[in-house]
Image (cartoon, rainbow, N blue to C red):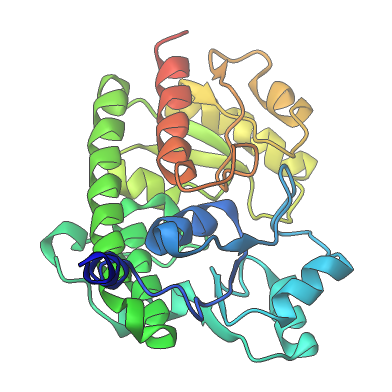
Amino acid sequence: MRLAVILVVLLGRPALADIPRVMTDVPAVHSLAAQVMGDLGTPGILLDRGADAHHFQLRPTQARALSQADLVFWVGPELTPWLERALDGIGGEAQSVPLREMTNAHEPEDEDAHANAHDHDAIHAWLDPGVAGNWVDEMAHHLSGADPDNAAVYAANARQAKERIAATARAVEEILAPVGEGPIVTYHDAYGPFADAFGLIIAGSIAEGDAAAPGAGRLFDLRAMLADSGAVCVFPETQQDPALVRTVTEGTNARIGAALDPSGSTLEYGPDLYSELLTTLARRIADCAAGR
């Protein structure tokens, strides 16, 4: 009788052997992967806390972990070209899953919930919760392929993750509701997916790209744009020089908001990070718009 009980308990647990070794690039991807893996395992992450995803150099220990991975979930070479070079140079048996390229390969079960997931292909696409839901499906698909014994667990975890993403999206909508149609200006052009998903109006950005430093002419044009657009807030960004924001807003009616962090590199890494990332962005935007 005792042996039978033990067998029932063991058979009810997920299989723990040969859990895929997973590496991720940025905190948002790591958070989504952690939710899909659940109690089966913990994904690794390459980006250090507070580091810039666009300009990062792997340490030897990170390169070794990458070479030993079974799956690498990453946004794609547009965001982290250094990772593309590492994957080409390190070798190993890892299956590369660039999520921006793979999203369309497997449609989500709930098409209505993610109807707008493919409307844009911005580098920072994870800021759209519809895209994040599709990425969760993609992760579960590849994890199940590498570990079919636990396919049902990955699928169940993915469903729970998507429910949590949907709940977060509803919370963000509520937080941003008072912002209305007041235009804002961000440090660089990273927030289009977030704006599209939640109806924000972004009048412009200080830097045109992730690696582009604005020149004097652009700063002059931005000051004129602030006056013409009636932008209520200009937001600095973590890892960027806030002096440019002060220069642009000097003499205007625009307020300076708290620094935004589109990748979540300043937050605590883990499964909770994705929800915290979206709600923190929303609160900082709403607080500035309200004059807080």
